Image (cartoon, rainbow, N blue to C red; front, side, top):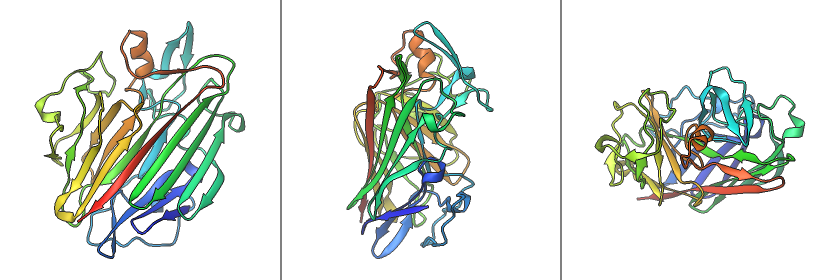
Amino acid sequence: MILIESDHWRLWCDPQIGVQWMAAEVQRQGTWHAVVPDCREASPSNATTSLSRAGQNVAAPLPAANFHMLPYSNRIRDGRFEFQGQSVQLADADKHAIHGALRKLPWKIASSDSHSLTCTLHSSDHPELNWPWAIDATIKQSIDGDRLSSTLILTNRAETDMPAGFGWHPYFVREVNGSEPTLTLPVQGIFPDEAGDCLPDGAPVELPNALDFRQAKSLDKNQRIDCCLSELNGPCVIDWKDGGIQLHMTASEICRFLILYNPDMPHFAVEPVTNANDAFNLASQGVDAGVEVLKPGQSMEATMTLQAIVT
């Protein structure tokens, strides 16, 4: 496990399991506060350094505090889709292929210092990879003052066009210093999901009031949410106001979609992604779901940044 840090942030990552975030803290008034669940006990390379809890609820039965979804985000119905006349069937124990193919694999460290970590993965090193196109991928985690950034790069190394997408799946703690969060999510629509299986039924529709966080609103810990939102067009704000910590989440323009996940757990997730749930199948139906088509040798790149503001 590797620690990168500044005076504002500390981030623990594990290159052995997808360069996943295992813990992250923000410093406020001389004390470090967890803003994502502490998942370091779940890491095969478990570190011995302990987190300062500062009276927070950071317990969570999670394998990681944030993972990276490449070469697609979220789910593919039955692991099956059509692309340019080719039928593709992915294998997955959960029936629907989910959260990409790279998050549990070991990555190679390309460079590392006290404030950044860059890791790479080549599909040629992983014959077990659950994806039919050859790919290269890079993840860079970096800290610059009060900003924590994560950059994803995906390259098509196959000889044919490849459908692609990616995103982040960061979880956040339910409480900081006993304060629960308000959210501001600048989105315009929601993908309909009549079956409640996180697989959209069609193009986005108007936001219902219960899921409209365009103006700052408290996140009700008793409201179960798992939805795919569309037309992300600005920074998301996670504000533990009484706890004195606010996070401003920004993502590259290509990240036009956002997943909001609010389970019956001491954590929730706000996930900027480039493609909607089941995007490859939606695209076959003529729905704009954010599918990128990478030609041989072509890459896509995006960055998510969390700016910590303390009061």
